[in-house]
Image (cartoon, rainbow over all chains, first blue to last red; front, side, top):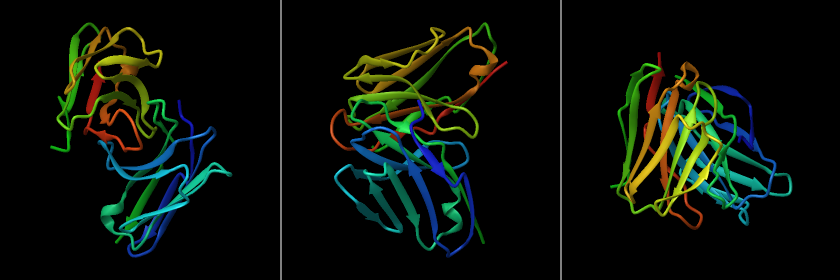
Length: 110
Length: 113
């Protein structure tokens, strides 16, 4: 079942700008993960943040996690056309049931 | 090898047909998953295999039958499907324990006619 809500549903930005998307969830988690999906194909794992971590970086990606608010954000800096995709947050409660949010569709304009 | 391979990539089947989707990984992952994704929706969990045993069935109709012949292979047998079962079927694998991301295959686009 879907646990998370993502905001915004869609985002259109100019190449070089930053993109920020947010994820809220409902229950306790072990970790939170972000995935990218291009054109309805497979999902690619981007980054994982554990419940005892507050911020994590990977290349142009920055993820924050606030467990008191049950929310996370993903920031993509200096966006490129290749970043055009759908982005999903997913929560892991250590029960093998990775639960996905509704997703944010990001369009990067050249 | 860091991939999950799914075959076929596309499948069109009639409502009386029997077909199978296949998934393979050689990363030593002991947890494998089937997800279903409808257009513009997030993936929804169907089945989980842990150490080749079915550990989770998310109340999936019996016309979907999973099988895990060994630690590298996962099948999804399809029989008497309905048009509303048309979707992208994604296989994934992960380490069985610890904080690890999942590796997804590129999916099978299924159309039931």
